Length: 337
Image (cartoon, rainbow, N blue to C red; front, side, top):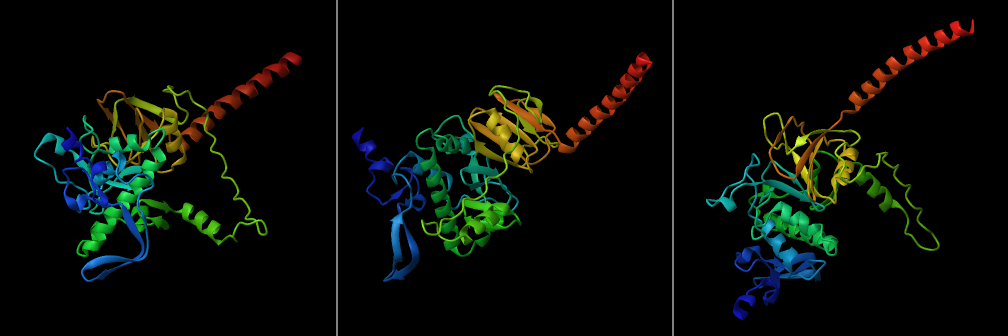
């Protein structure tokens, strides 16, 4: 038993982290170079500062899982496909992109092939990763370490030199919008404008205090009960998984959430979101229209109401309301006479 424990990653003397039986090329270095790496007498050296790669301890469950998920050579095919293993537990991998603790489906070689779920935690999956990042105590630390592992994976792909199309960038992630930040921690569009404005402000000190940025206007969403199935602005499609017109899962993003209400709020403030699928701890934000459901236990699918449809319904209600008011006023006038 002791001999087996000594093989665990946490007891390894190597200055990198990986699953015990994984290939050495999957071992993520515990340190990174902030500066320029140079080669001297056949060895890589840092022309700068050497710092810890991870926020938490280098060798722990979250970092081991991250090394399995973000294996550099697990890239997708040009059309977003993924090679499948012979055994069932190695099948079902699909193409994903990772950013700020969330996974979204991706179509292109810069994605990473991962299974969405499996009944055992011995297989690295997206759901297992989301649960890890949602941990009540270490969730924030785990998320930061997943970002660090993802960045290392893309650094490895870039270092190969012969497969630049497999390297994810913020420009590629933002799909034509203004992009800023580092891969795995990208911001897009207006968020970049806001960050640039804050960066141009003078330093914040007691002699020249930086004005606080104006708070964003609150999103007016009615409070909902946690277990409610009648959500304002959403129409329940049914119990089960959301499907597109072609009976496929479509394009979506996976986010770890506490409850159904949190999932609804995320979709409500995201203009591209057209539907949500919720199951315990996991929210799917669909950016393609969904029309049907597939049988899946403890899962529910909602279609986001179109804003114009709601406005037409309100207008229709008003058109029925005012004629009744006019008729009532005429009757009152006759009674007075």
